[in-house]
Image (cartoon, rainbow, N blue to C red):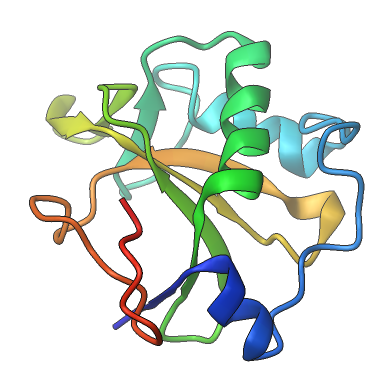
Amino acid sequence: MSTLLCDRCAFNKGFLPPAWNIVGNNYTGNFYTLNKFYDHTITGHRIGPDPVSLLDDPDYSNYQNFIINTMFSGYFEIDAKQRINKAMYLGKRIGASVDPVLKSVRYPEEFFKVVKITTPTHVHGFNFQPGYASKPRQCQACGKPLW
């Protein structure tokens, strides 16, 4: 189960903003991040049984803007393994989850998540639709609406 926090509460709990240049970072600047970009923008690129989410628009500037906007405006998500992510509700369809084995679309997605935010060389993002997306969520520390 993930913990959802607003920026202020995350900061108060010691989750500091990343110490790297969010705007100036190249999100395809090494093999790892380039591969992640391809995984979420090119149909059939990912090999394996796990479903992959695909952005409707594979343009790099779109992908970069989603990461930057989510880092500045999104909420914190601390997952069950204590990994710190940022996520944001965009209010419009940006992609779908595709099962590469069944070759079928799972559902439209309106959220964007940025993961590995504490490791600049591994930061990447993808679209998703959480199970709790049907209703607005609040910061689990102060109650502030997150979207």
